[in-house]
Length: 567
Image 1 (cartoon, rainbow, N blue to C red):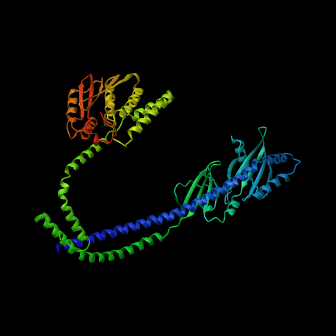
Image 2: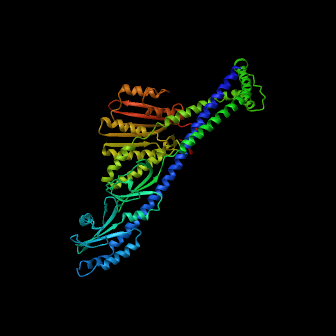
Image 3: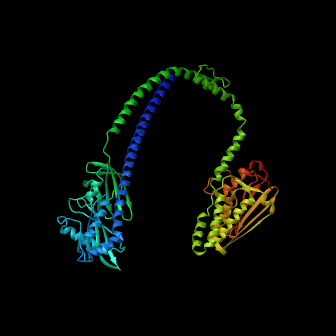
């Protein structure tokens, strides 16, 4: 009865946990889904509105620009300079242009002294502020270094702002006068009155060129940049998409009204109600299943106790016609196969050795990449052709080093890599570094771990140059009694005898408890993969040099991932 109560309690706790996880997960998924749908809808609407504002602005800008750049307008303007000529011709050309525009323009034409020759404004609209402002922007247009169209924003308190296009007219580099087009802000607002969303367009100084809702901008006709998607204005909340355009430099902001919604809280409340219902339903089902299953579990536990404490040869007898029978069968099957599994211990030990070898291999990485890149950086300036050759060599080295298709290669293939590596080091150190390679011909057909010599040569260079200005490395190889023997010897200052002896002792151990990994990893890898007799030996001559001797037994071809003949 005790086991039954424990099973039921565990099942009950499991159900409660799963219901809680389900509730939390459902709430999170609902929140994410609700937010994604809402955000994506607002984002799409705001983006489409921004594109519409962009297209309208550039369409209006292009039309006004074409009018001011028209050569015929320059000729018509010249006629205004003649006091005996009336302005009907220019008036006709301007009215024809204005009828073709979606948004109305006003015009002020001035001579070189910025005196008004013609204007489409009514006398009641042509106040002193407008006249002076127009004279000021004509002066700015005159000093515009590009001699192109000059843009500005005209704002009179309480009205929509007008976007101004000023063209300075020249003849033989002499200023004849100015034409100023005032793109009507109120007419532009009327033109876009059917748009469902709001928008603001500003120039590079944050002066408002266009706004659909004047309450969004300051009294000084300014609107500061908005970088966040969510924008609060008074008690209103908006989803904002903005973009900056060049030629002319403007900022376009698209606003989509984004009010606070109670739909999210309602959804969470519904999920909680459903969760409570699930909880009571699942609790009832759990109790029903527990009462039926507890008896089977107690039977299964008692049978297992017999095997564990009384008779190891006993087999579970259980015929319930459900999954418990399958569990009993699988346990019996497992027990019947324990003896068979014991016979595979030897294979398991071999597998562990291979895993250890793979772990050691992952620690070996080439260290000369950064130095080579620095050489290339300098050669790009001093000798581009040599830099190109060095880049090609480095590319081949990297391609070879990161090729994971095989871990064991012919020595001939690896020496091609080593020769390239030595050439790069020779380029790095120049006359300060020399090397010789003397390998018996039969050595090249021997099989070795990939990148075997590179870290050893790199250590010789690294430590050899610490105390000496010049360094020579000798690489030799021969075969003796089916063992490939490779030697890397440098004429540096070697190691202290005590340190060399400690390292030699470390190479003979099976467990590295120090921070020294390089030579130990290589030696251990050779032993694990090529067997007894493979590894590394040291011959140290303090103040004279260090020789690293590598032994690779060549009698386990069937265990290596290389095709072809061996030595």
